[in-house]
Length: 407
Ligand code: C5P
Image (cartoon, rainbow, N blue to C red; front, side):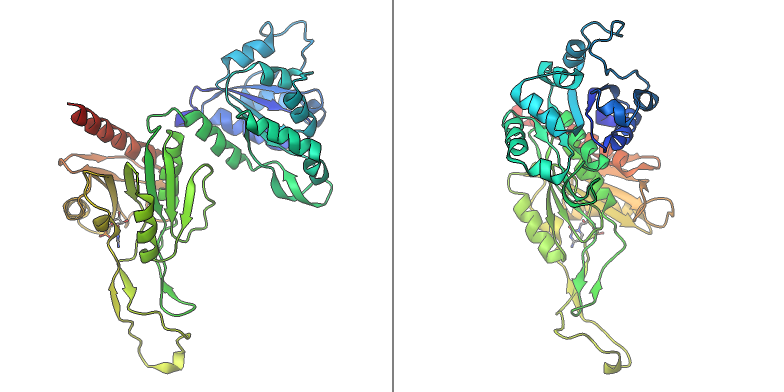
């Protein structure tokens, strides 16, 4: 949704066994609200029928440049002109050679040559073909012309061999599409630092004090900020989530490491969003050897407070600061107190006793409070949507600061 809604995207499909994945890609782009036109090379139609793409995109694919009865005259020129983005997935070695040499012979390379829109190319082929100097040279040529090359990934190939050549995952390609289409968004030119996940405070070589944070809210914020054009640094505690594409990710373990990474990341930053569930206490020391059960009847671990990162990063004048408050009681009062104590511009409060929202779920129900006393309750929604709402508030606060500075 959001930055793909109503955007005009052309998907070029060339003849590789991985065409079946492009069907899923076309479906996801369409579900995200984009206007999707698919063009196919004749080879691609040997793998999957155009009818399948018509089914998922709701539009008739273009695959025959000699069609005497096309929907639009000079389809490749018209599509090239309308497109806000051309994605070629999968892109064969032959297609890349045609584009690099400027020898279009079918609808996809004709459109790629005719368009002035950004182009993303996702190669897929056997490793031997991919590694051939001719293919590598063509890829370098495409990259030097500003074409975004995504993948290929390593793994099992259709030949049964392992190596580079697999089409990138659909989610990865969608991440690049969102990033490229979002480059001129309302956070363009802004640097946003986001923290995510919990921290692990080590007790001994095998044990730690942690919490239930999955990182989903912070990762969604990093993606949404990227999709609005920001340069994003994501400081992540231990999390099973894959790093979002086109986001600088710094992986840390302990609160103290997160503090150092946040302070380094905040140099030149406009916004800090602390979505991480940072431990409040850490063991005084990490014991060198594993603690044994026989050692004592009861076990106490002396602890000291961790550094409060939000407190340490400086005043709200220099950096727009957003905190999170996960509370099990007195949600609003506790959140208000944190705005004052931690000198925040906004705080996002959520009640962690709700079973359908908060930690480790895909949805969240939050209240956004600001330093001027304002308060907005959002209904239950996916974390990416929550992130978009939080960023709406951030964008308007940044605009307010800019007009204040100019006055
Ligand atoms: O005080 P409490 O931990 O509830 O505050 C939550 C907010 O403070 C979150 O935004 C969290 O990321 C941040 N925090 C921090 N440093 C800590 C603990 C929490 O910046 N040591």
